[in-house]
Image 1: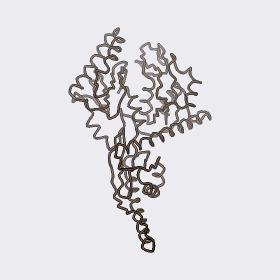
Image 2 (image 1 turned 45 degrees about the vertical axis):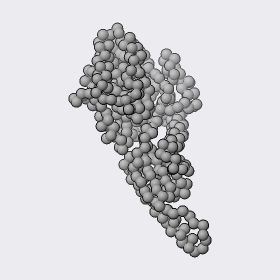
Image 3 (image 1 turned 120 degrees about the vertical axis):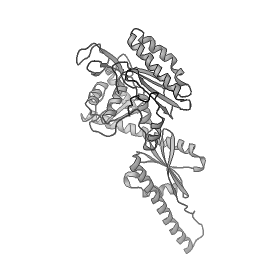
Image 4 (image 1 turned 30 degrees about the vertical axis):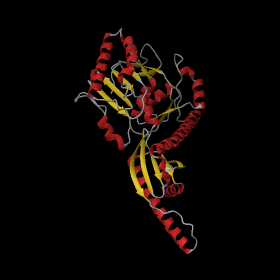
Length: 399
C-alpha cells in the first residue's frame, strides 16, 4: 500500500500515554507542512481518522500501539502490541514499518522446553509472552541408594522410563516445529532430563538447541522466561556476528556480497537480496520520484531516471526494509559490531549530510516470506487479527 508523497501518517506510542505523547511531534510536522495547503489539509484529515479510531477503540491496556492512516485511500488501521514501541510519528508515501521490522527481528518466536523427571512443558515464546503448547508427563522416580540385584533392575527400569519419556518430548517438539517453524530451542530445568531429551532429538532439531540451563522450575514462569531470553539474545548476537563475517567474506571475494546503501538498494530493487544487515541506529536519506516512482539514495533535486522535479524525501532504510521483505528477503537489525562499524567509516562517503552511516550486506537467493506490518507465529496470528482495529467497515486492508 503506497501513496504519492506525504499521504500516510504512521504513529507509534504507548497505550497508557496515548496520542498526547506525540503532541510536540505533531506541531513540528504541521509547521513543516504549513507552506503546502494540500499536504497540511491531508495531514489534518489523517490525524482526524486516527483520533476517531482511538475514540472508538480503547488501547490503554496495550503496552505499545501503532496506527496507520491515509485519508486519500479511506484507510485507517491500528494494532495493539504487547511490547514497548518508540514514540514516533512519520509522514510519508506508505506506512512506516521500521519499528515493527526491528521488533520482528529482535523477538523471533522460539521454543522453550521446561523439564524435570516429573513433567515437561513446551512453550512458544514471542515478544516476551509464552504460550503453553504441549505438556508431557514423565513421573520418573528418583535414583535409589540400596545396592544389589534389585537396585540394578530398578535402575534399568528407570532408565527405560526416562528414555520413553524423553522420546515423547522429542516427538511433541518435532510436531510443533513442523507447525510453527521456530529456529531456536532453549532447554531449562533438570540436567538429567535435558540431556536425555537432547539425545532423543532428531539431528536437525538438535541443531536448533542454543542452551541447556540447570534451573529450578519452582521459581515461576516469569523467571523462567527471563532466563530463556538471556540465552536467546546471546545466541542472537553470535548469529549477527557470523552473518557479518559471511557477508564480509562474500564481499571481499567479489562473490554475492554487497556493501553500502547504493549497491544494496540496486540489489533490493532487482529482488536479489537474501539477507540485509543494518546497524540499529542507522539513518540515511532517500529520494523518490512522484512521476516514475524511481528511488535513490541521497537527496537529489530532480529524478535521476526521468528528470522530473517532483521528488520527495523518504527514510531510505524503511523503504529498503519494505522492498527486501516484499521480495522474500530477510532484514537483520544489529547492535554495533566493530568490523561492521569500521567498514562503514571507510565508506562514509555514502552517507550524506554527516548522518551516521548505515552498513548493509546482501546476497542473491530467496529465503523467507513477505512482511505485512508484523509477522506473528500461528499461535497468535488469529488472535492478533481479531485485535487489529479499524473505524470504518469498508476500510481497505493491507492483509
